[in-house]
Length: 121
Image (spheres, helix red, strand yellow):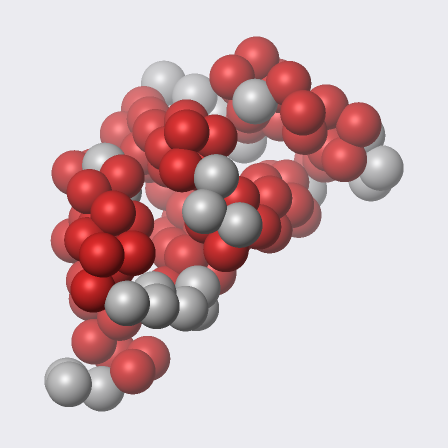
């Protein structure tokens, strides 16, 4: 089980580009700040249609949710998923592409967030 103190290292191991960003604040003690930074990076990759990197980020988020303790799961649920749901989906092709990248572990949370924040379209 991954605890909140292991999250920064786990993210850095899988997404080395975030190493510097995660060290700008004492992330080891602030899992919500860490996940917020991670969310911003993931969102940027999706907006720039850098799907290879975005897919890695989403995979890491799914693993954190699956293997994380309750604090880690809470950070993914309260910070990562809402940030993910705010990303403009664009055309149908982009929407399908993004949906296909979201791991099963957080897909249901993402859909719930979409429905609650954007209404049932």
